[in-house]
Length: 133
Image 1 (cartoon, rainbow, N blue to C red):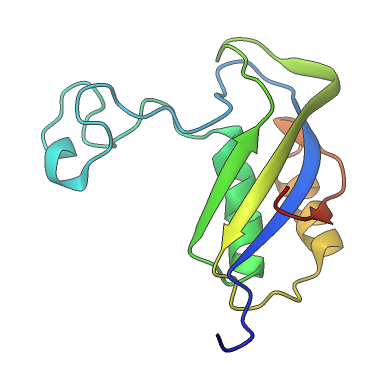
Image 2 (image 1 turned 120 degrees about the horizontal axis):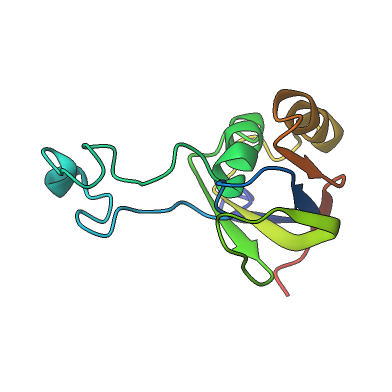
């Protein structure tokens, strides 16, 4: 191994301030998001998913580029219906970054970007790096 980190884990809590925003990607039940099958899919009109965004995607759009990673996984503690808000203390989650090419990214900057660019939709607490366990 070349000393490169394979995975990074960050925990936080999110508050979902709007309805009709799923926690994770809402894949089309017909084509299941498959590139091969979504072309011509009438259920999702070829998009592969049934919602424009999700909490998972809103966070991933900011955190993955900062760490120069292509893949990440959102691990939410529990679930909620798409048509409800998640208020109060929010819901805990861990975001797993696979193959970060820049593991020294500024977490505070990533957090600030999520807060600014997704204001009114979600709020998150500052990220904290944690171990896999």
